[in-house]
Length: 488
Image (cartoon, rainbow, N blue to C red; front, side, top):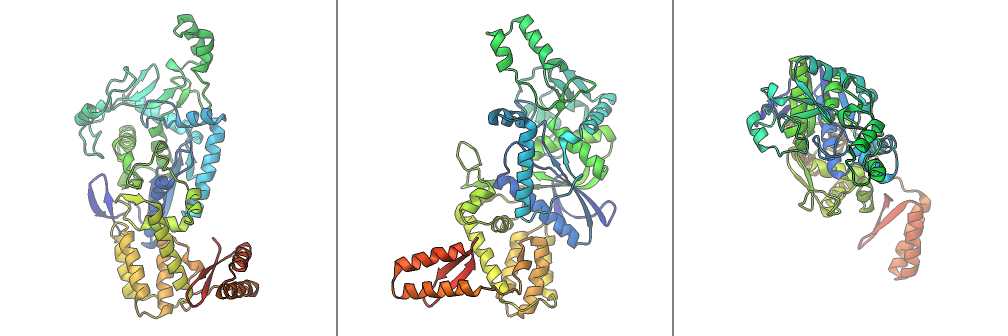
């Protein structure tokens, strides 16, 4: 039986579905203001493995993931500018164009990593569910959980006694530990925005500019009112005024729409626990008086060279950066699997390249095996026990290598690895029991290069190496011979 660490209960629990064999699973998706980096992508590989593990247990998984294309402020709370708006202004484009580009890149990166994303409408954009989000705010308003300030509609956390349960911090503690924000109209520091106004009091931009000019509250009214108050690219009318939804609202509205409430599993990063997921739970339970999800599963951070990723350190890497270091997307996926998802993982180029080498070795060995026949039950039990133990992928990979080195017949090795890769997602079905076919013309060039090396004709050897690369192959020299591999 699959066991998962539930952040809500802070225990490892046997998984049980609400309506077996159906499982509803919601994952917090990307905010598409920039390209996803290696830290972001780790979490999505984890949830892909979880979905694969649930399927292997016989469950039918309905997976929903949001695309945050509006409402996520730069402060990750209720401060700062909308990340999409800020990125658009920096790049001289519209927020709609920015969101479209980076969503497409995210989908392409996920595919390269062998992540099976939900299909539309279950891969759902916040901007396409504005009425659902407004409806949720209206329900909360009718039940007395909201209040309005000059910059938006807020959820009053003091009226929800269970606030803080996910993080394990009582509301009083959270209020004391939360810094004072720039909005003095908030009743409590933990209160959060449900709907943000484009401009104060929900007026349109021109009315706001006119108001500023009447008040003469800028140094240079004619210039500053237009330079300092950019026009919003994404805004909608609402019962409270022109604006846009708060970041937390979309997940509650869309998860309920597609999965009902409660549903089985909600996933995200550990950074979501103290604010984003705490707020989701509060607004969903306040509105509908039932839990949002039964299991809350969170992945740990990925650091780079032992440090947090940041632009100032220049250590935010994408899949393209990995490829420049000869690390394939599936090599990166192997690297992610080398640590249990609830453990911090430190990214270095050496460690990621080591994962690529291990994957290449596994591929080469698997090619030499006979075609898969029957699974060996004992080895399969060892592997599945590790995967069922809260997705212990490093231990599962250790079982893979123990089996590879064992005296098990190669056709059984092939069958086991083929079955296990359905969970690991490393694309090994393209290698298992499939010897590498080298074209005759490629073999002929390689032979000529080897002969040139033996007679120490280095210029000729270099020319022939380039010819091999143009044919799509690389040649590794050994002491007694060479080895050909398709060029990555």
